[in-house]
Amino acid sequence: MVIGMATKKYTVTLPEELAEEIRSEVGPGEFSAYVTRAIERQREQDRLGELVAWMQEEGGPLTEEELAAAEAELREAGQHFAEPRAAAGGDLPLAG
Image (tube, rainbow, N blue to C red; front, side, top):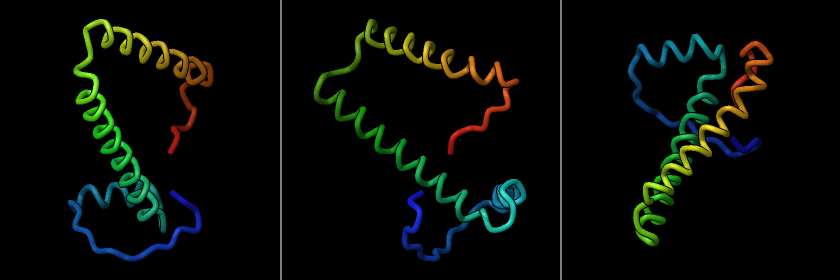
């Protein structure tokens, strides 16, 4: 979230149980910030989906070798980031 960004109040409809769970988890005054971060993450995912669609349109679908290489890199990155978490007892905060 951009600090100092102009804000405007909107009305949205959420499932009551979900909204109350979030409200109790994030504490007073943080519900809007939580929803904002969730929307920002969804926008990022949407844009990544658009990028993938464009890349497939331009270059065709990924080959089996490209998929295998990408999966290997993801596993390696996951291990890289899991090691400090494990060393800290699994208590490192998640980004966001």
